Length: 117
Image 1 (cartoon, helix red, strand yellow):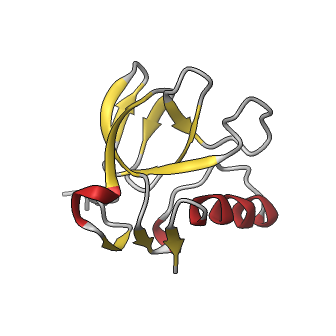
Image 2 (cartoon, rainbow, N blue to C red):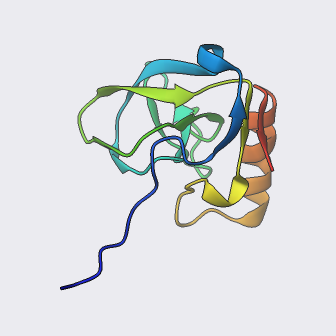
Image 3 (cartoon, rainbow, N blue to C red):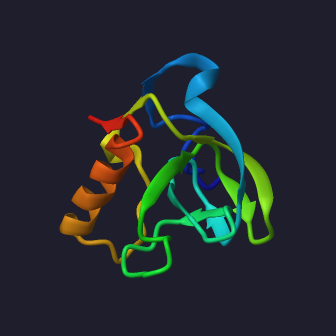
């Protein structure tokens, strides 16, 4: 029997939050994302994975996906969007992100009171 690897669990990146005020339900689109994926807002208001190299708004970190989801088509999903303390080592970043871009994204999240520890 092959051992199975468990993926990130729902909200596993959260250290603490302020109840329901910390989360929103938003449209997420763009691919298959794991819980803890850092998200950015597209011009149409949908959220997608952060793209630090973009110049269309998706380079600005806005929220964190609460649970693993297939968002190849738009899905209404729960995201952490404010007043949340998170475990930085459990956040999911784009493969090509640099240390400098990660620092910038964490500062962008901090502006909405999502604080990485």
